[in-house]
Length: 435
Image (cartoon, rainbow, N blue to C red; front, side):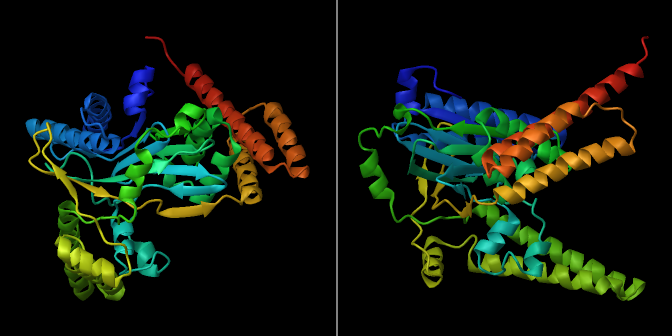
């Protein structure tokens, strides 16, 4: 939501929100719609002078609205949604996060993930119990989230910022339907090479070609113009007061999730063990894996998640982490008695954008696969336009102009997808029957 006036920009800046609903289709769609509407409305109308506090409270008020709606209708019970919100104003930015949608920033040739995924795999890795590159780490499902708006009356939201804005910064907000299918290294190169008009269509098409859902959400924002980076009064002092804050990823909701995960895994282990007795040794490995996953979840709960503030500080000290600040608490108009906002320490992951040649090769492969598929299915498509664009891409590659080469290769992929869509539309029209 772009500020409609200079006064609103001075007071609240620009707001961008991505929400990815969960549950039955109608319930998830409703939850995400409520999240976007409520966060925008509550943030803009907030009387809090601090943008970070206003944004955090708006997220909690959205949670209450979704929860209340779910309680009022059995069909919507336990509906939920992720939410990632970005505020950009005079020289400063804030991010509020619940769930596993993401906010990225591209700056000076480095892609940074500003948000922490509230997912089982991220939290187990953060606890130090497993490594992401270990066999067990790779076996954990990536789509199990530990926080969302709506299922519970209370939720902890992460607040990142204020962070400094720079001219040339490029921000990406997206749902996990995108990041689950496009690697971060590829994402950084595409964000670095494409114009803002092309990024979203290219990313969505590539994700869909790789088997992604149709409801992938992408927002791209460029920081341009001096008013965006001009620091307003008091911001520098505010930043200094927040330096040294640690990231608190503990929450009651996460604690309950891990306890539930322990029970589910161990119940599965018992089931697999029984199957092994009656059905043979093929189930033994599954029983062992389920038992170990449950054990790890239990250890995580006992050593970190759901711990008291004093215990968290002690654990952070032993792990060499910065002290975790006290959670911000307050009474909000949403009806929550107390809501929690954790101050984060993002960015959490960094990727140097230097794989342009490899990405170019993969994009050329995408176009080749589309063409091969069309030939195998005997689709009569005119590939002259695609071939012309690919020739331009090859010329840019020969001249070592990799950004231009990638942009042209993306144009070729978009044109190939357009050919396919026109073919399918024509085929549907040919087989339609007037009644």
